[in-house]
Length: 329
Image (cartoon, rainbow, N blue to C red; front, side, top):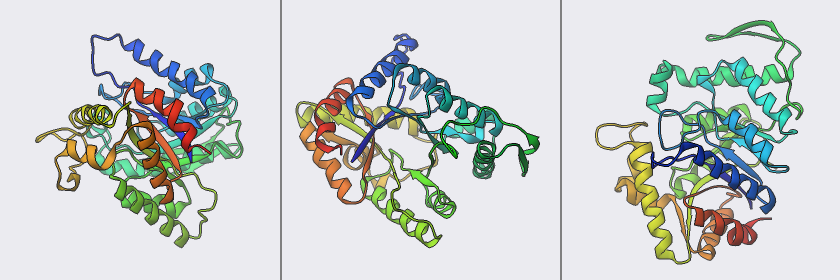
């Protein structure tokens, strides 16, 4: 089992200076660098205190400056909100400045308020995303970019710098829905699996991805497919459950939306109360030993890369000191 950390930048209390949110995260990354974590995966969000990191590439440069071996992942670069040439430049520059440590994760997003604010019609998000990814990869691997698409056209543009990693940094596509999984599998892309699916859905989606990948003539051998999971760990199971309950409430209120106002697409939560759904089916919570057992059970189902999102400082400390040595290989 490899273990990375999905780093959100939550700002639930606006009386706290926002700069302290970033400094705490960077201090955490420095700890990760020496503790055996594989990567930090930086979450990009806009217009919400759920996570106040609108540029994972700028944050990635800061992470590179504070670390030496930790890989720096984007989870994700929200490709429809960028000019793809600018996106190719920024990720390549991060790869150069980090000494070739970038894991590039790209996604189309699903937050309605973000699309509205950036003026991207919802029906355009997927084709813009697909076109942007195609352009970025071509910009990294060719001398000059010639491209004619629906949204972007270029004639002989030399995109500099090129990434350090050749032919380019390892690439993942965020894939939550079945159409997204099938598109990624058909193209041979590896995928990032989201922190909001139930554990049962996560396993089913991983199997579906494997089937579609194989059917498209691509191999699953050696692929790293991170699963993102919210994690609450404490000295007792009851304390950890309470941390998980508070985090579930915050997630539902700020990230999902309540009542008639939905920030994402409408979801059913398996017929459960949304907070209870997260508590029962999504968040890994318990003592260090208990969470390690839950991670091992997922590994037995083929989920062998945990992208953990610790829900408290204590969760991160116990993940680092007690869980990681139990599960990492």
